[in-house]
Image 1 (spheres, helix red, strand yellow):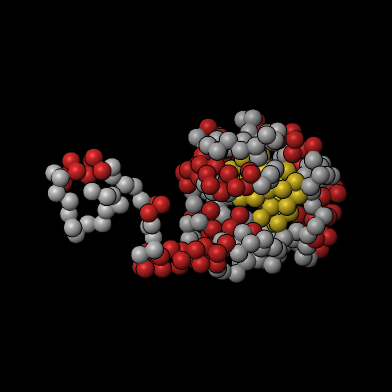
Image 2: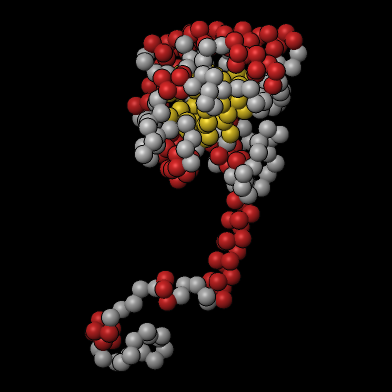
Length: 290
């Protein structure tokens, strides 16, 4: 059995070996991710897109995130379980943010929380940390800001915007986050941030020079038939495999090939005689010899 990953362990991996993180939203996906040996499981608000059929992440609230985080935590993975704080769970007040982060830990079983945004989130980050809850930051393309950004666009491409993100990264690290997700930013900017901040960086669409990588479970395994972002590498095509398997099931049911004798339960001869009062039915198929 592998050692349980915790926040100090993640911090110790700054500079290598590379950290790995994938999303998971329920017990089966958590078990698969943990068996594969990932360091961290992110119960992301991307559950809205990947599982629940929404167009963006804004539809899920804290109760939804607790529900899915708890399903992952109940598998007791060796990976660190990070619960995503959804939109409006930390935007209204610091008190709300601490309360919602606490619910993700107490009710959801999260071992850390993640929230999006730069320097304007520092008061929230510090308050959650004061409640002894580890915080992971998230900069760059932040999906909860999709409307403010005008869509899912690469961030930090211009010089001033890149400097802003670099300053955000420094301030979040100084505030005490234990890791930073860098999403949808130029690779050279991600490399610069990684070199300058003291905490591990986890890239997603941020190039190869971060301290680790994160991808969505369903994207990595090809569990949907839609387009995936440029930064995704599909390691399987389970959607097509699943369709073929279910077509075979449909065909076997329609042809009578399923269920067969090996998938069926049989009654003993003694019980059958008792049921039919020693008068077997000619219109029924029996695997018995009377």
